[in-house]
Image (cartoon, rainbow, N blue to C red):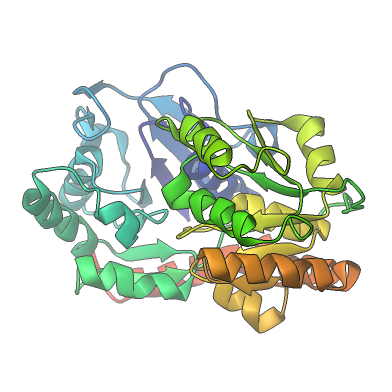
Length: 369
């Protein structure tokens, strides 16, 4: 098949969305499909070297507008070709509406990959004009050939926005389990992500640690970039709760330093209130690190089926209990189950095959395009 993936910030941003976009582009290319990427240009921050393929071309096209919600492509129809499938990323943006309309006029099918933008926690903060944006989003989703979701539990979120949305395709981001393995022994529990306390559950994690008796409290090391002042709020909460001796929040870590930081931890924490996927979590499961995972995120259900991590609700009481259970678990056995879970569920050839087969059926049914 021929794919053209469109995301204005495909090269100018380094985020979970761009990581997923380029990972899928590379996997589709490796499977023998043709892939192009359209974007708005800018200083290149993506893709990283793991996802660079000589066969994948990317092109900056003209855009107008200021800010993420009003940014839109000019003459988008000139950049898509008969026989291609257009893949749109995220949502609530004018650029996707313009691209979807152009695909409809060109008679080509398109797929929407939401990356979790229909989570209630995101929709609560949807900017005005809210009703107009809901109408536009419903139009895009209901004329799509398919909606590419990572987990089946996302389907009700799509249907709440667009009851007649395109065919759901369930195919998570794949992951190659490498040679790197968890060793532990660092004397701390690790967390990596952006400092967005509400989304990432850092507030309830800190509250949970504060409820534990001092001799029960683990040392917790937080690493990541600031997000809308969340780093400062996290530091202030640590100070207010008197957790300075146990919780240390620092900036981002990458490369070999990141690998060593995760491998030496005594376990990994994922207290998020919602997650479309959770790349950092999958990275830790893949090296065999024992993990404590919020049971509110989409990956929690398949993890529970595989007994691949300790699950707990993202509340102070729930996470406090989860920390106790994590410390009492057989770390090596839990890590082994996590590693096997990633190897079985996120095998790239398997998920690419499921995606392409499902898309071919949706196209054959006459949806969209």
